[in-house]
Length: 68
Image 1 (cartoon, rainbow, N blue to C red):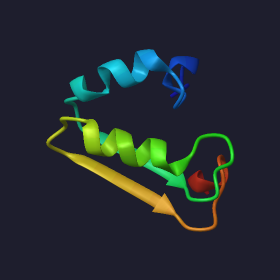
Image 2: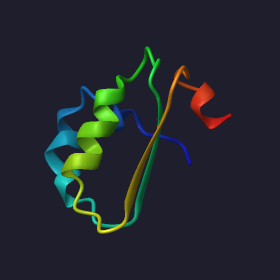
Image 3: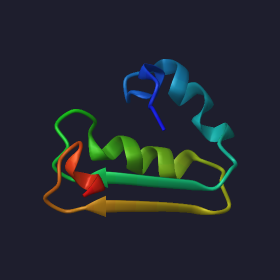
Image 4: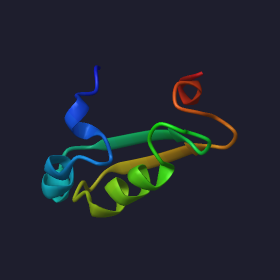
């Protein structure tokens, strides 16, 4: 699934509505990501209202490597 630019951590639009996320949520992030800080996924996980949500952080992985 492509990620729209509006989901970047600096996007005010995304952060304005993140607490409306209520569908099951899976966040996958590498802790060495230099493009989007891992804190963005942690904050999203914390604020999302989803009853089913998983945050998976891969140590030593970057932006694209977390999917390998």
